[in-house]
Image (cartoon, rainbow, N blue to C red; front, side):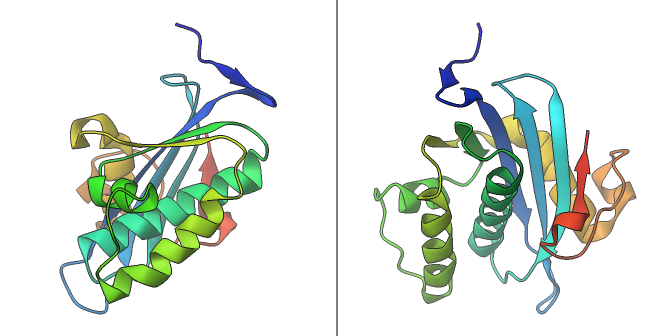
Length: 166
């Protein structure tokens, strides 16, 4: 099946995942994978770190990193963003309230970024369908051996220099 096209061309799909550190004060690992269409080739990856004390904070940080990357590198293109966090998707689509005080600023930042897209789909997927983003998040947290992947470690913050074009 050919991916649908939007006003600026073919869809891109972004997979995001966050992995919180088991030790307080250590930044979470974030993984971002960008593909052409639904299942097309990987065209960019990012393995990053950001502050997060909980799983949900790490998932929001990963989504924020993925949305920033899409706005910077693929402006105007329709985006499908996949995450294994039902909480993040439900909160950003208004199906669930944001009750945790620590999530409110992250939710606000993500909601602002979402409004920057003409076409954006947020989709919660099973963890098994988000394996590469998961591996990149663990790589950011513990290094290449923990992730079991051949992608180089690409940084420790949300700076665009910590991305890798495939």
